Length: 389
Image (cartoon, rainbow, N blue to C red):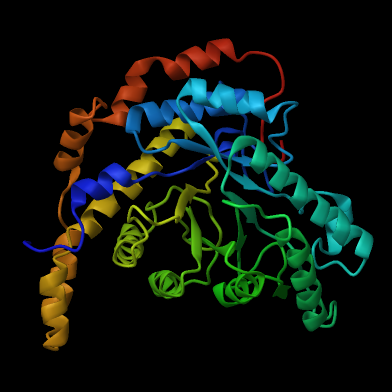
């Protein structure tokens, strides 16, 4: 490997992955939410846990918020607290899927009063973003229908476009609205933003301050996600990633756990499309729930998985690959691609960490730090945070 379009070291130095505040709270399935010792009781404790991940990995300088789960009296004070912990506040995620009024939709609801409530919630999120200096408002909608005839498919799209336009008017300088898609769940017949094309169509109609959010778990089995990545980067409309892993549906497992090769392929297209270049505003974030595994180590493992596959993808000899592709050398091109994927980069990553004052093995460093034992001792009493709080 002699010629690359990127320098692997510069890619590593630039890599930053936002952590979701909700990943540190209790989570589970519709069958059971399991409580764990040391679980945060406040957003401040979530931030402290996220900051621990960053101190050990150097990869996670921002914490994403979920509103209203992370509401506080003063976001200015929360911003200062995060800075004291060595991180900053990042993406603000809206929530229009929990209130009873949203049973039949939020931004797409037939009742204008319900739609206005959802619009006002997003405007409030934008106000919070202004207060904390956040770039992205992430909009994921549970809106949809379960049965043919239940709703007017075209009418729902019209109402969605109208509602998004009302929100977009309040998106300020240096801010973006990123619209996330998901092909099903909780709706099972029609989801109002089911795919990248729908998200793309709406964000193009909105303007330059709107882009698509791609959640790696929000696709039908077998979907070629790296093609979507390449296409959206070509079009200048890939705003952010929600990284996770899945075996069946939106499992929200540790990124790279189910299919590390897919993660490698995705990150190759991210690099090739300039998504990790200095001028890029592509935001990388985890969106995961650690139902049975320990939460802080789960987040550490996740960002390390992204880092490892990023470095492997950066090692693809793109000059040789292009030559093989243009020569019609099918197996040669595939071999060049696979050589990078099979490269063991763990020693190189350990050296990179040590050269920057980080532990060579962050997982071991956390286990030996005593942090988990300390929070289990300190966080006694109160109400643990969980899904929805």
